[in-house]
View 1 (tube, rainbow, N blue to C red):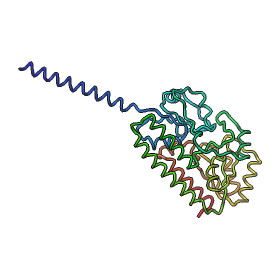
View 2: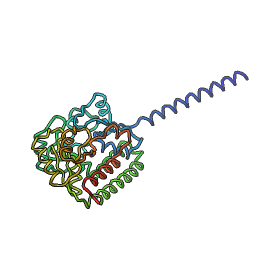
View 3: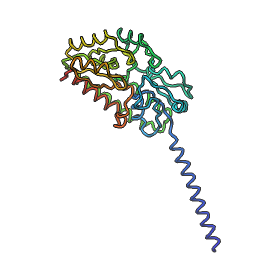
View 4: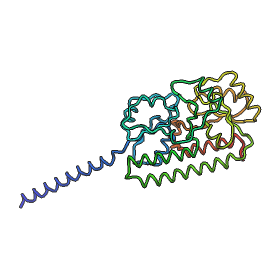
Length: 312
């Protein structure tokens, strides 16, 4: 009788041990999420909102890093090469993409959106100040600042996520609809907020807001065209000073990650205010700590634009 009890206890322990192994193995499989690599903040924001915790996002461009001086690291390259899906902006924004080998072909998102042709002044500046980090051609690569483009990107990314994780299809499509609704609301707010402004122009250190200016009918005057790397000449500074005087502009802007010394000097000489606009090529480390999103940053931009252009 005692032997039977010992055998029964042994079998029970063995059964529980095998169950524990099976549970652990199952949990490991469930936690083995697909890797999805993205190259810009707008792609990160869309992917994160659509997929939630169902995937692991590889942020190729770490938060707080200047997108114009970014260099790939071996660690990031290894993750990219293992990714089930790689999304990059294209339109010449990531020349380093050519140096990576991919398990599956990367998706150039610029092929799915409307691209704005550069104005003559911007194109001349780009050609004059071309460098190894920026290979822009005749097209403006900041296309995520067009809300209709963002909607197209949402559709494409949702479709690709369903392919790699079809079990989450319903969740992805629900999140897609919510995100698109948010984008349409932003468009409505920008349309109404910028419809009646006393000043119809802005001054920036470089023209990263061309899509917004085109859609909502205001002008951009910049020190260096599209290139943030360009050094401003004496004639550039003189031109901007004249534009401030002629237009009555009271606030001039620069973007994160750029040297603001020239803009600060112009602001001091002209007795105007200076502020930061966020073109969303990447976010700062502080914005990341505050859990900034595409929506929250575009609302901040709108508030600053309305104040600078004296909009009702």
